Structure formats: structure tokens, C-alpha cells
Image 1 (cartoon, rainbow, N blue to C red):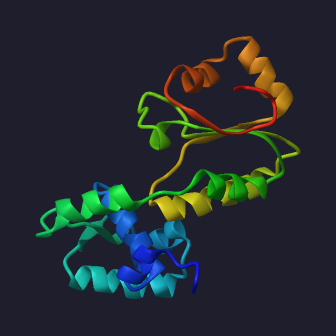
Image 2 (spheres, rainbow, N blue to C red; image 1 turned 60 degrees about the horizontal axis):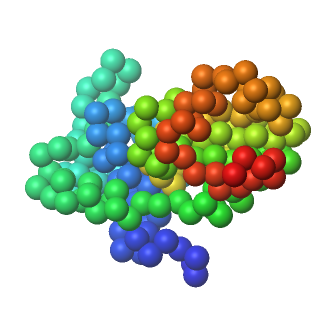
Length: 193
């Protein structure tokens, strides 16, 4: 457990920390045990156990949903706001971690971050991935891994190098939205910087 996130030690488990982030960063959404387990990428039994602790601590609450019981952040929790601020200030996935995870999908040429990573809420994507012979299923899995760590859903788009160059040439709206607003190029083998 040498590489364990120090906050996971503080909160006694990485599953609990991921669930805290999920519920507090999506405080208007309700999640079933199954959905929460999927979103934070932990076994359903672990999610159920940790959610029980969060429920007992009154950090989350039960709510009747149309498909059964869902759990939602308890905004009346006495330390809700300070906990939310603390989690926001301490939740970070480094650029190297992002590139390493996304590289598993194929031959990367460019990775650009915007939106959630830069505070540019106007953009239509948080991550732009350009690569050749990208395995879309593997890319989706990599994005899911990052979402589990961040506690938030990520909007992403992927393109082949040829398609991306074409879109840049015709001033494609999605590409323009990313590059006209605050963004960070964290991996570049095609010369965008």
C-alpha cells in the first residue's frame, strides 16, 4: 500500500474516499449501490459497506427513487461545506497519470485538457484525445478509471490524427471551442504548441 493516496489513509479506504467525491461533487444526483460502485470502480460489496458508513455518519441520505432506493449527498450534514471545499482542493489527477492511463488505448499523438481541468465551463469537452489505431473500448475504460478517481463524469472526444488535422483546417466548432478557451496541452507529438 506504499502508493496509496494519503487521503485514502485519512478516510481509511480509497473506496470511501472515491464515494465521498462522487456524492459531494454530484450533490444533486442520486445513485443506487450498483451505480455508485460502477462509477467509482469498486466492487459492489465494498461500495455497500462504505455507503453504510457514510449513511450512518449522515454524510449521505437515502431517497426513494422511481427505480428504488438511491443515495444522495446530505447537504444538511453539519460539516458539508468544509468537507466539500476540502475534497475539491485536494482532488487532483496529475498530467502524467492522465497520459499514462490514456496511452493504454493506443498510439497517442495529442492530449488536451479543458473544462473541468481548467475551469473553462463553456467548453464541450474536458479531454481531447488524438491518436492512431485507438481502441475506443480501451479509451472508454481509461476515461472511466480517471472518472473514478475524480468523482466526476468527464466529457471527452477522440480523433484520428488525419481527422483532427482536417477539423483544425475547417475550424470545426468542437475543436475551436477547446483551443479558444483555457486549455492545457499535456501530450503533443503533432506540434500544436
